[in-house]
Length: 312
Figure 1 (cartoon, one colour):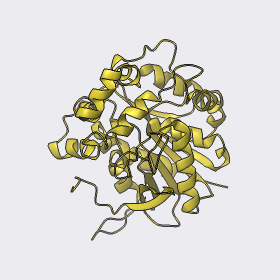
Figure 2: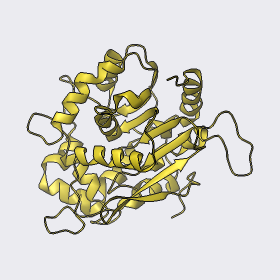
Figure 3: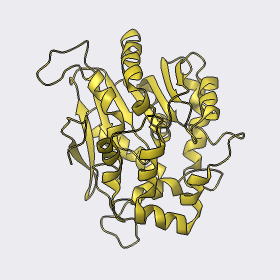
Figure 4: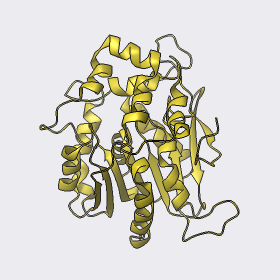
C-alpha cells in the first residue's frame, strides 16, 4: 500500500533465523540517535510525523535545523515485519513475549552499531519494551520522550479496561480479534478525538488483515502483566522500581487525556517518577496522541531535544 505521510523506505533485518524485522533508519548517520518504539495495535506509522520533523531534510527541500537519526522498528508480528506463528511445530517459530521484544530491540541496535547515547521515544507497549531494554542499557539512555504508555504495573486506582480483558482473558474475544481484526480497527476509530482520514485508518489496520496477520495484536493483549506469575511481570515490575533512576534525565511527556487505558493514573505515575519532566497534556487528544496533536507535539519535541543536547 501507499501509506499517507509515510515517504520512507523501510529496511529489513533478520532479527532471528528466518524472521525479518522491518525498521526505519532516517536522518544523518552522525546525528543524535532517537529510538522510537510503538505499541499495539500500531506500528512505525504512529511516529511518521516526528520522523519527518526530526530527520532534518525532505526531498527537494533544504534541511531545517539539525538532523536526528531516527531508528523506528516494527516489532515482530507488527507493521511491515514478518508475522510468524507461535505454534509448537511452527518453523520459524516466535514467542510473542515482552522479553522477546526487548531482545529484538537489543539485536537491532547491535546490528546497526548503536552503542552510544540514545533518546528513547515510547508509546503504549513501546514503554515496556524501551524501559525493559534500559534495564541493561541505562548508561545509553540520555533523554526520554514519553507518550501514553506504561513502564510500571497497572496503578491500584486504575481498573483493567474490559476491552483489553476481552482479548487477554476470553477465548471467544481472542478469536474475534484475530478473525475480524477488531483491535486495530477499533483503535483506528476510537483511539483519537480527531477523526482520521480513511487512508490513515487503512494504514493502521492494513498490516493486520487476516487471521495470520493479526496474531501479534492478540498476543500483545494476552501478555499484559497484571500480577506475579504473568510472563512479563518481572520485567515490568523491575522497570517500575527503577524508573526513578531517570529522574535527572531530560524528559518530555506528551499525553492524550482521553485515553481509556493510559489515562491520568498512568500520567501521574510518570509525573511522580520524573518530577522534572516537561509535560504537555491535552484534554482533546486520545490514545494516538501523535495523531490528534502532532502539529503541536512535533515542534515541541524538536525544541526539547535541541535545548537539551547530549553531553558525554
